[in-house]
Each structure stands twice: as structure tokens, then as C-alpha cells.
Length: 167
Image (cartoon, rainbow, N blue to C red; front, side, top):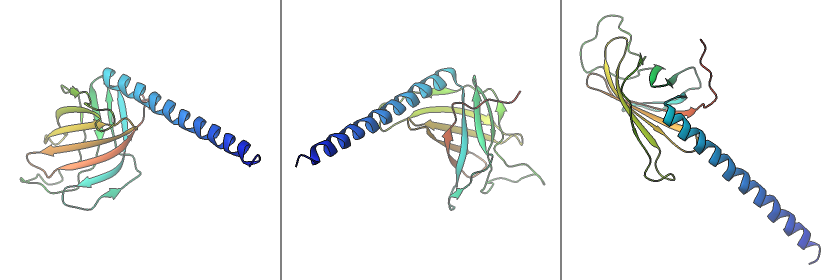
């Protein structure tokens, strides 16, 4: 029994250190998230593409959505169908490069909800998209894009707080 006491003490001490580290990391992410939303400056690396009515595509490529002081730039693929006629060779990607008015909703509950950001933007091919970005407190995000003339698209990705934009 005496040999188990030091083992149990060491196990409990190690468990306490791991839990404290996880809580500290979550607090650090929450602070970065609050700052990113208040400054409207963050970068999302897309890792999952979810076309409406199709199978999810897991992709580790260069798709992104970037918000810098309210200016939105993105390179998101469109995999879906058009509900209107298209011009030959028309670019259907969701490529934004504008400064829309962004509406921010704070989460009601940190454990269940994330920040929600809403804006409307037009792509290079002049298709209008209503975009909802949800930023979660674990560093992940969801992007939902709805258009009147195209099928809906959703994307999942990771927030990159340390992303430096090339100038």
C-alpha cells in the first residue's frame, strides 16, 4: 500500500498539470478570438468543402478566407450547380476582394455557440453571395454561403491567428 501512495500522488499531480495546461490554452485561444473579432482581422485555412447535396471533400490545399480590418479576400471553390444561365468560361469560384459591411453577433454561450459574422459580397463574375462565418472557441470555423443563382456551399476550416499577409 505504501508503494502505491507515491504513484497515486504523481499521477494526480501530472493530471492536474495537463488539465491546467489545457485550460490555459483554451483561455489563450479565447483571448485571440475576441481580439480577432473586435479588430475584424483573421485568416481561415479551409480543410473541408461541403457542396449542397453532395459528399464532403476533405482538402488540405490553398483555399482560404481572409479578413483584414473588415476587407474580405477569399479563394473558395464552387462545386455545385447554377440556377441561372452562365456565360461560357465563367469563373464560378467564390473569390471576394471587397470591404462589405460586416455584422457581428456575439455568442450566447461560449460552450455551444461561436461568434457569427454576416456579410454580402459579389464574386468576380458578379454573383451575389450571403455569407455567414461562425468562429468557434476551439479555433475552428464554419463558412456558409448562400446565393440566389447558385446552389449553397459550406466550408470548414482552422483559424490561423498568426497568419501574415504578404505585401
